[in-house]
Image (cartoon, rainbow, N blue to C red; front, top):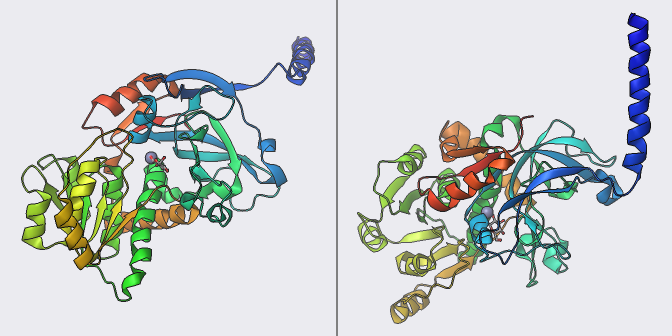
Length: 399
Ligand code: BGC
Ligand code: ZN
């Protein structure tokens, strides 16, 4: 009886193989996977769709890495893309797969990959090089070309799907001990870059040694910038509208920075009280605040703008006052976008130190998980409607 079953099983197996192999071989049988996408240009077009599974072979020279997506974070950029204010599909497609804050586990690697192996946790950079000299030396975040390629944002599909493949150059290992901070790696890279840019630009001062920083906005970039600046030893004031105590103020205070509610103390009042700042990071998402910040910067200081403002807002500024103060004070304004591999690596190191200095503080940023790609409507709802949702992310799969 047992033998009979076994041979029957064998037969079934053979039959299945005979049936499946030709199917796989025919070109019209493609393996697909679920993805969350938008139709750029059409407001509120977020939807679920099937897309082809990527394979390692799409990357030349045996340098491909296949990543199983575990979690993907979403932010205001995704909201603006869904509002059709921003973003473009890859050429030839009428949809764009969303998602640029990735966290996953390596499934397979090409024969020439050395930096990661199956089972490693990873994240991926967002921008891919264009043709300028900056792109060619690994600083694609500084491209001088008008057209930029960003996965999940502009001209390239993103990570809100089940698997992705990319070149080893763009896959960054995440230490096991930081697994619980998963989707924060990409936002952290942007904060790390913004501050690195400020320091880099301030080499013009020869002996610049900043003491006081204002961080405008207590969203993910504001909070992560607060951490980077605290680790550099600065006195940091992080400003946001809502009166504390609340989650954001507890995260700021957990990093030994000062939370300031602008509904109690305006930026101008704060600058009068504690003095103007040597360094200001604007991460409010508001262009008028970005301009107002110019009045709170001290002599020889640097202001970094990081907000992506896809709207058409117009604002009035005290231009004579700002102009004379900026000229007489040798002040500097720097725009900062995106991040390259080095910023991911330095951001990840800062997170590791942050975990040691301020244990269990950073994970408080990860407020709103959504389970499964199919819950994309809830993901967008949280992103659009829920002001208390500090960080929305999708649990795509378990390991
Ligand atoms: C992303 C950056 C990107 C920027 C502009 C941000 O939300 O985190 O990687 O460069 O949007 O598209
Ligand atoms: Zn982003």
